[in-house]
Image (tube, rainbow, N blue to C red; front, side, top):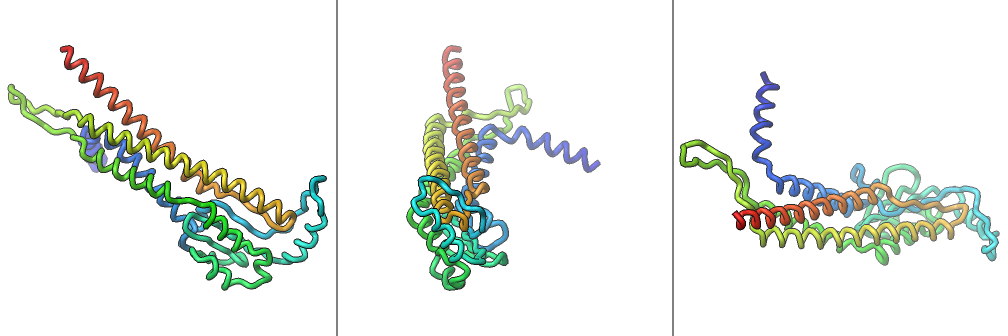
Length: 269
């Protein structure tokens, strides 16, 4: 009996959900994902330290030798300096997380306060300072912030689109009708979500390129003692959000073209 009621409820709900509601859901998901991306490494809450742009950590491994190295023996000096250090530093848009000894994460947007909580033996090569320099000089979160605002404005515009409603025709029968949305509002929403998509694309490309470059240089400088990596979770959040916004952009474009075609056919009739 409960299953029948649930099925009836779903059948009543489906006609209420319009095309623009699906677009609104995609926008909401994109906003949530971008918000998580910005929140990465901002606190030591569960999962937040796992959302990072780059990570730098001490680890002994066989150094790479190349004829282009003028002083290949410097790797031995760095190894002796690093000793048994195992600190890891992760960088987000608005914070840095460190793990000095494999225990709990310490997160803050102030690198000085993090550096005051570790000893020289735990961070002999100043990885916390390197992470802070990357965050302050290279990371640029404001395009994503603007994109979130624009996406929310588009969400509000889509919420103004008319939905299904019931009317009584001349014969007394009840029929469901849905007026066409305003063409001007649709075009404004399309322009806004398109700009938001471009901002996210630029930010994600910037984030990806800068992260790969920074990790490569840091690992080469600490050859044999320092490793680095790019945060895959942050990359997935950024690119997936961009894909959702592009789907919404294409969906709005298709809707506008369909409305224009319907208007032309109506005028011909």
